[in-house]
Image 1 (cartoon, rainbow, N blue to C red):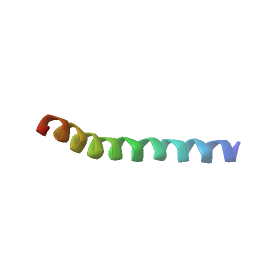
Image 2 (image 1 turned 60 degrees about the vertical axis):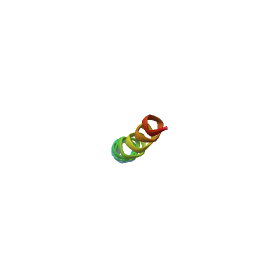
Image 3 (image 1 turned 135 degrees about the horizontal axis):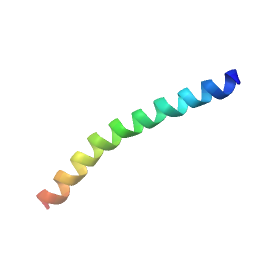
Length: 36
């Protein structure tokens, strides 16, 4: 049960990090497409 809660918290943090990275990379990618 403890390990399940730990892995769940890790996945939650991983998703947040992915969202932040996608926001920054996505914005640059979108601007690049618009620029071209």
